[in-house]
Image (tube, rainbow, N blue to C red):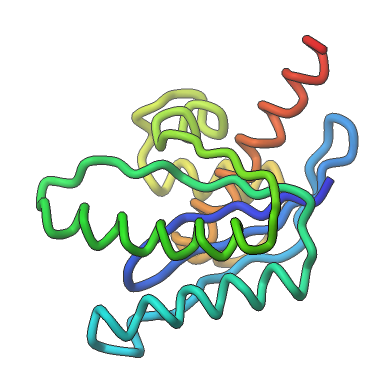
Length: 161
């Protein structure tokens, strides 16, 4: 199973691909779609859509996991995040792929052991679990964490079924 994890953002949308082999997860690739270069918010949304579409066509994942929206302190930021997430969801929907969403606290708990883990802790645990050396962009690490969360959920469901 090839899982695409998505960390939606209106400036940078992180992505991470993980191949699940039994109980193990293997790193495939990760990065981010840079929509910030478009400047204007309305111009960013098509960039996110095109970037997601290219990823889906290039890697042909079998499942997609996306981080659920959290309520930010700033309502405008939450709305923009919702738009960016919606564009990513639309691309996945057009590809007719199964998609699951996970709240940030569940992703953090799955990867780092507790739901209030700091970004740095999540990054370190993702790197350790996937054997990644060197730097890993925060957005990409978050997306890989979402993919790992889906791997664990899929493994749990397999044992129940």
